[in-house]
Length: 122
Image 1 (tube, rainbow, N blue to C red):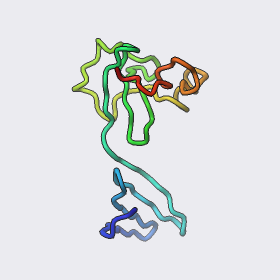
Image 2: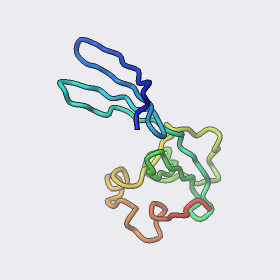
Image 3: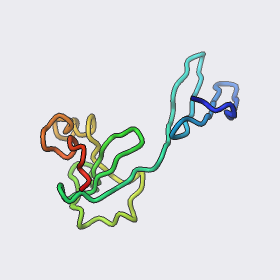
């Protein structure tokens, strides 16, 4: 999975190895013989307007679905969003744990919910 051309940077306290992974780059920190995955960045989030839910929905490289939400709780109406200005750091409500903290349920287990629609982008 790692390419042979991994870049290694050393420090007295820790060693960081950056290697190319399938679909992205990961930073691995080795502290006291324990390996930690620090970051992974793959393809950018693709944001699309959903006619069904009248919102903007995106999916990140780890397949986490999210809706654009300026307050990070309520999905914004699609007609008020300029897709060309959205990127990976756009404020969003993410299905799963984030949705559970804000709404008391994950969204993924609720029939008809935008988090639970395999073809939400229509």
